[in-house]
Image (cartoon, rainbow, N blue to C red; front, side, top):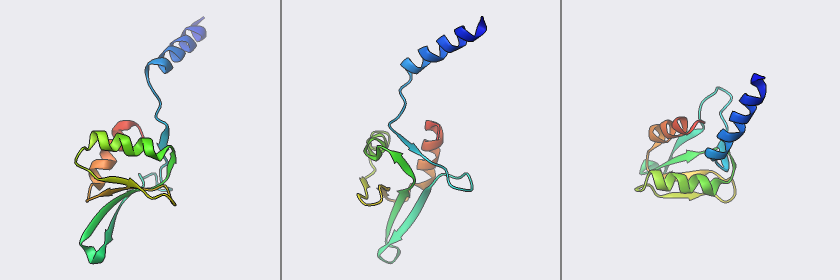
Length: 100
């Protein structure tokens, strides 16, 4: 008797919560794949999000809406999301808050 009620509640909850079109897989050591990258002799700082599965442009749009000052782009070959500046800790906290 309880099983159909639980299934019905689960189906109704799917309607109200949208599932993002992307996912960020964890690393082997269960960490988030968010890294800092230094270019031009250490004068240009970048934040790189790797292991993006699915629609990386949706992730880029979500980051742009939640961090309006960030300049975000996607590497077309590797599908890594690259953010200008050092935002590793903020992005990791944001991803944890999103459920990754």
